[in-house]
Image 1 (tube, rainbow, N blue to C red):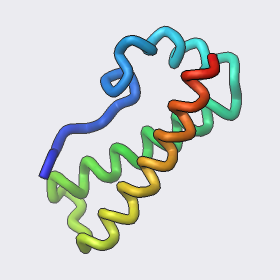
Image 2: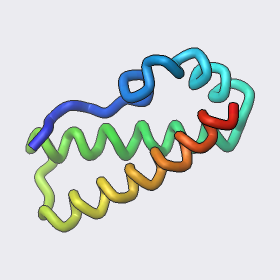
Image 3: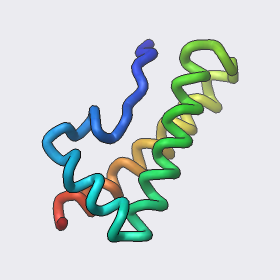
Length: 79
């Protein structure tokens, strides 16, 4: 199991400037990025057993993170 936080700027280092720009110019993107960040940090805490949860709960949250990431990727590709 990975205990590495999946921050957007680490996931897409080549898009870091676009991420910064969209966060300031696009309210929808900014909301998605904030939701991703909050969910990502919660998952990281759970994986590190700081906040233990059932495996099913963790897997559900990971699916939500992936869904957010997919939407973020679509916006990054069209930016």
